[in-house]
Length: 430
Image (cartoon, rainbow, N blue to C red; front, side, top):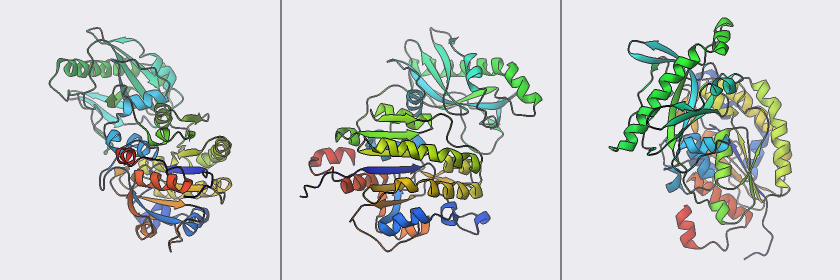
């Protein structure tokens, strides 16, 4: 066994990195079409491969895919609810018995059949969100239940339900990210218990009250007068309660930091007792130029964090935003900006991995189950014969097709921090 001191580790998480071929890019994916000489250099100095965030072929959300890359055991990631994660990231305090739901402010239209979704993100409303949420704090929902809406990231908000006898065994009112318009679902109990039925009814009451209050709000009238979509309703998903988690990086006693502009990822950092480092503003600006302007600050903060942490996770939301907006060209362009911005971090003595939390198809605008292209550069480590970072080359790379937890294991091994880990502990986190 070597007595060399552990190396620093850097894991760059490019949200929604994987994609499928696009006609707009001559049959290439955005990553394959992008000019990424610095990521290509990392591939040439190390290995690439494909990673499955959870199970092969299974689409996952950001909180699941990212939590595994951050060291959560896959068995726990399967049960991880988005609501409390995002609430933690947004600084919304949750007490035992509370239920948190992840929400969008959306544009809804009332019909005799119910509420229809015109735009699930209300045109990506952002600046007005705090004021709109303020009108929905302390809403009485009957049976001693109170609902409060809190701002999160961009158009996203958190619904916190408080009261006795609540249950997180409830479904989503969000029908999914299909083509709008579509009908908002009623909240359904997922088990035959009085608590689940009571909580589902409370969510439906909140959704109805929110639409009534928001549709006449002066800010929404101003948006409509300006030709913008009103943020006149709430769609909910990811209900959950506070739960303890067990994290591999924490188990190893490593000093870890997470840099992000996204409330969900910041919430994971807090749940895992990492150092959350959030910069002002929001990741995922709609225009590539705006996104590029934010990257130097993220990179500078990452370099600063590496001075006093063993392992740093840098999460960049932008690629996923362009995929959800069905803009493969914009995704290609922002990947090129990311490639250039990362240069100061790519020091030869660091163990560096680059991956994504999931694949997001920029033609469909939604997450899919395809594996994610990933790379690992370990100083004096193995090198394969690949020189390009993209889906096709990754399929033939030396890492093969592994799990996202396997990629983290490989990075930690390259750092030299695993020799004393007991096999039974390794089996738990695998």
